[in-house]
Image (tube, rainbow, N blue to C red):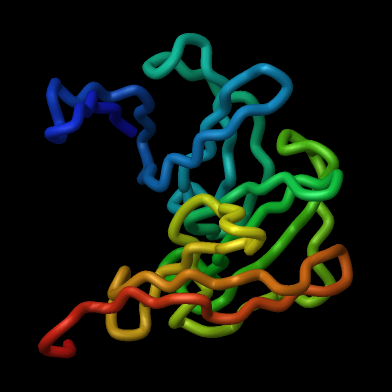
Length: 187
């Protein structure tokens, strides 16, 4: 994982590595909890969901905890809502299988919890067009919008914003709000 300074014109400095491992790291999900800054990068090659605590922002991190082992999870995304931390993640049945079509949801009282409760409707989404997370969930004009990758043609083919319309420990439903797909020739 690397950081690079930006200004109004774009990149304005040298990229610096801030987290290295002997396995693949990507999708650096940064979040705050109880006055600390944390990083949850994708580490699906290792079969874990790991969290790192910031010692000095942005370039010094230490391993804090492992949320899951033996899961090939990609693009894991956290969101705090109504007293629970929610973990959205796409899972693959084994390391060589792409995790693009099924979204799983878990919840806990803390983002650092040792135990997470699986949502009873898991997988909550089964569709390659909008299962895989694509960034932080946002509340916009009273709507909860979950960015999702459209991987129907290939990895990262397009972006869809999914509006979450029902969500609690027993229910989950979403519908497409907007889509951003390539224009012109379809591949």
